[in-house]
Length: 118
Image 1 (cartoon, rainbow, N blue to C red):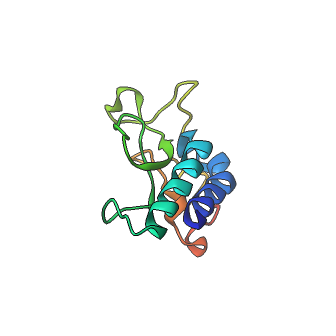
Image 2 (image 1 turned 120 degrees about the vertical axis):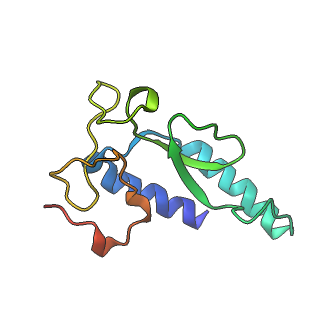
Image 3 (image 1 turned 60 degrees about the vertical axis):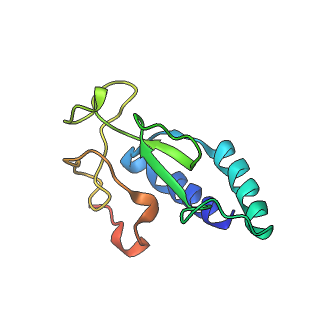
């Protein structure tokens, strides 16, 4: 629960600046985190990533994972820079004024000292 809340907090702070997520699945992630915490306390672990929140590109099947959001990507995942109404231009997590070549900024996992606006 604590880790999911931390990730969601980082998304709340940084996503408005970098547009890394097109969907944030807050309620589903929190509900699944509660379930997995209960399972862990009961001694049941589903695998090495049990309870670890992740974000995936929006074209990935997410069955069974605690997904905190779907990451921005180019239309049809062909590459390039997303410039549609739904898929806003992403910014670099290292310089908010620049875009990113691979059009994803994994802000939730960067240490605070690495996230600096230009």
